[in-house]
Image (cartoon, rainbow over all chains, first blue to last red; front, top):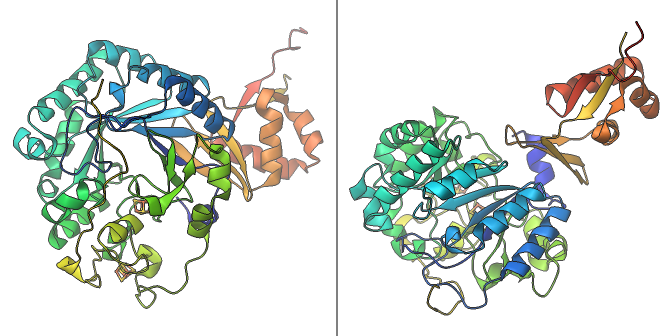
Length: 359
Length: 91
Ligand code: SF4
Ligand code: SF4
């Protein structure tokens, strides 16, 4: 994406480009790095009527597509109703799933829908590496899901990988796995949010791992990255993408109970802009104090004197916040070593919710 | 000679923004910026299909400027150019 677009986007838009909507905190897995600390469903999740009304409101705002996640979104009984309503309103859907419920019938139904992208999460090139993070049996289920999608004729699904110190050396194998299923590989950054806070020091790539990851991605512009590695830009030419923190400017998150946060990795009261049950989403997006503040030009920061600032912009706000750094400090994975390195204490932050059984 | 019609690609979504418009192509999943007001007006006119000459007149653009605009929007797959066969059976 070009510079003029990036600067226009920084000031905020009439509607988000990346609206992420976590449909439920319910999940059949309990991955060690789950950004939303999902497991049991939360009390008071939006019901079908509320979900459909929300689709109407963001469709009216001109949202091009919605990123649906969770939890495991396919655990909602109205999952396909939600998808079909979004598509009928000409809003594209990209949804992330662990693949457990992507059986032959569901895959056929998806293959028949326009405007839908599917991302199956896999965090290792083999069962052992993946299941250590995502739980026993999860690799086989995800691979079976990819097989079902291929058999149903679903074109170009994505395999979504969170880069960790255990898988960055195996990206070639992950790419081969994607090729086997006619899928595109997507690699994103591990942020210390949700359960990722507890596992961050264990799982995050080493500085060498980050360097080899950046080199690997630089040679493969076809691999999607969700724009998540701009903190590595000082290592070479920036990867394709916006290369900026989009929180509250391009991106926001709506959680299962309708709370609106600056980005999927900031589920915390400090980054809560409002709730769609109390206020129209368009008002929250356009007028909330939090988002207006995030759209303002930043003042001098702990990175101001850094020659790489133009490319890196100090990195990811969520990664700083959850590791206890000030928001204007360097990214905890600053490639120039200005972050204080491993001396950061990871602040463990859990989403505000009480546990109830998943139905 | 049959005239040409300009039609907004149905796989394109446009949204007005303070700096012009954001454009999303559902086929290529590509997002891009349309800054020229003239281009936006043309896209609007083409939403339901418009004859090329009529569109140019409505925009009040010179032929050269108009052709450039159409070419750029066609290259971006925003506009489709169709042969207008509506009144072409005069042989
Ligand atoms: S806080 Fe981090 S994850 Fe969130 S939008 Fe900014 S860079 Fe991306
Ligand atoms: S000091 Fe800041 S701007 Fe410079 S590389 Fe580190 S995080 Fe990026």
